Length: 90
Image (cartoon, rainbow, N blue to C red; front, top):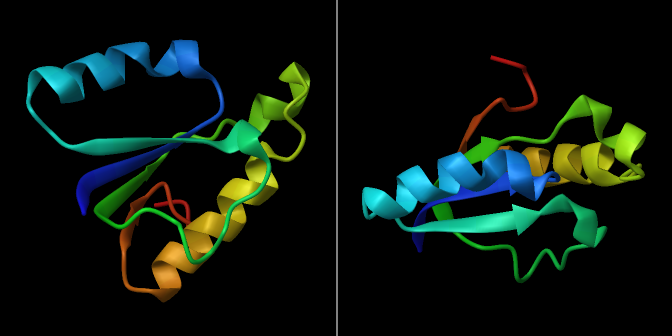
């Protein structure tokens, strides 16, 4: 189990975050939403999910990134995983 899963669709925007996490020794999984599909039996386990999906993803041709993020987030929440920028937008 990782400490953190980062949901993202724009890898360049995430470089500073990924670098900072690595420098602090925080174990994380980078979950690229451009993959467009996921296997619910193989979604990584983590203590915390950080949603970095951008609503403007469709402007970059990533039309499915936001709906995929919404589905993943809801699944994590239903399993009791804490999600930053979750379905309630807190």
